[in-house]
Length: 522
Image 1 (tube, rainbow, N blue to C red):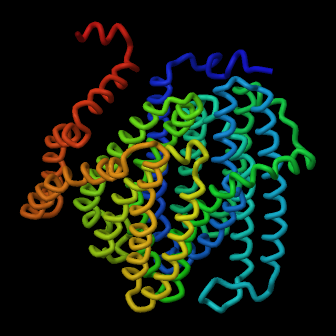
Image 2 (cartoon, rainbow, N blue to C red):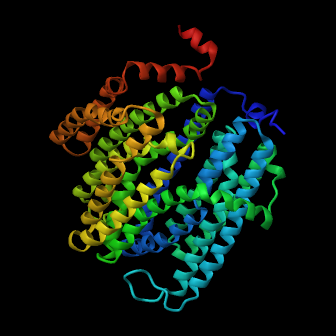
Image 3 (cartoon, rainbow, N blue to C red):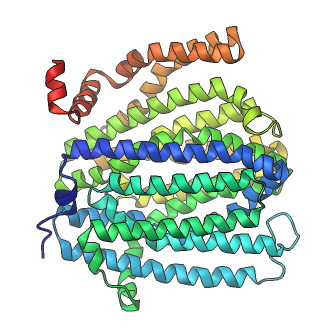
């Protein structure tokens, strides 16, 4: 049976270009909500609980993040399969893969919940490095947040149908509304001084409501998703997908070790206040990563479509343009953070945490480098050619933890950060672009040029902005830096991207504007 009338043709009659830009818009709103979550909740945490207890919360929830690894990379792998069957108009295969994926991960999540409950019943269970058994409140918090993390795994696989059928923008907007409402509720209860247990319970309830609403909307928007078959037999058939999804799981495992693993190592060697300092600096510089996520989310299915259709030249051109664009925008964001974070940080943390310029500079360097080498791999990830990437990512994580264990006790937060930076350079920057070049059939150095050239163009711009702001000082200097940045933005973008790619972006952007408006402007 073939998909004669697709969801996109029925509900979103737009070209790929318009669909892509709608995706960027909805993703941008989603990223804004995520940024607001980081910016607004940190001072509320510090105000309600204090710096030490906020550091305790970070250490406690770092353990819960590992439960998300039970998706074994299924969301990305199954999502790619669904997109492939969608573009081939094979509804039977679409329904089969969705049924197997959701059934498999319902089973995995249920097993994970049983395991989590068993572990929490152990009397001697404690946080790494503390040696004190967890209290009843701490176990309850882990159970509630862990339950939510497990519930969203099969739901996340089901929701990949949005991305696979060109409904990414629609699905993202539904999620944006629900996440925005959740943020308001959580901020309100923190402002009221509520404790961690109540915060965790509200997070659980809000997450369950969000899951129900989104899965119901998927069924309403995508007819093929209504007739999926769930059960043990279908779950057993779905085990065949673990062979491919396992490598996405290795990528997720490596990310968890790099981000949450080093937090646990740091917590074993320094006071909890230092953990909070490290985490808040990383969160602030992590805002740069939202730029890549903003572009990747709507672009991913289009890259899958290019691969399935054999449009190799288009795939290579878009991949190179994505790398240059993400690096360039990330560089501008890094300059902005360097200008403003020293001024904002004391206010943001309620003057309970001390700003660390060394941490900021190293985090910014890491973020811009990661913007380049991680983006270069998108074409491989979107076509399930990710095995070697996953292995190198795991090597990166192991090397990072090893170096953090060595450097952390001696150099504290800076030592742990140096460990993550060295791991990224050795196993990320030196490897990912080379593997991606092989997959795309590009000359070995072309992706490295796409990474380094925008950074080279931005370097004098950054020096100009930072020098001018430092001469004036404080908020006025930062404001002058912003004005100079706005003046230099367009010529910098044009120089970094080149005339051909710049014209391509302008052409594609113009393609989504109303026809009459364009005609009237000529």
